[in-house]
Length: 244
Image (cartoon, rainbow, N blue to C red; front, side):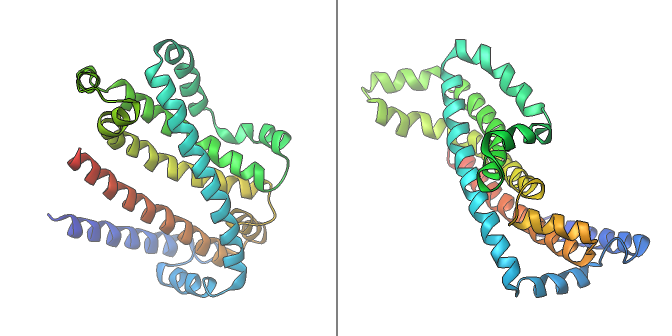
């Protein structure tokens, strides 16, 4: 069975399951697939949506940049420094397993209400998976590759460009895919708890007003964005693995 046919069958199954759940729960809890598409199309024409979308996009972009830079830097250091790895990796794994929601009051105390808090909260979600994947990638570099680079007389920049980056990039991409998703979740959660703008705030307002139409439209938009981005990153990941 080809990948396209398999994907189409999965999508059809999801739509059928969605429609079945809607028929069971009723309009008080859900909206059907067709109605949700129509409501989402209307939402995308409003200035209100794009104002909140722009705020979320700005916060998410900054949070993701911090997560990528922080995760790769931390992972590279711990991957190369064995003593630091033995000390800090268990702590990093423990931090990754802690529900971040319980730490949000500390984030608010440190950064206050508003934009910095949700950026920091999003980055907190994204750094651990990116760092852990980078640690694994660096630790699994074959020593013979580094020895070969030294024999060839490569300097530090050439060593990184020719040997290290091609060796670690495919595995790091796996962490980036997961980091992208959880950073988006963290940013949205940050907006839901302590913000006055953003899609998370708009979603929380809709929940408070029991606006099922807006809830379903926002959920559809966020899910579509996350799935589309994950598909693009997965495609890049596959190409990198085939290339390297």
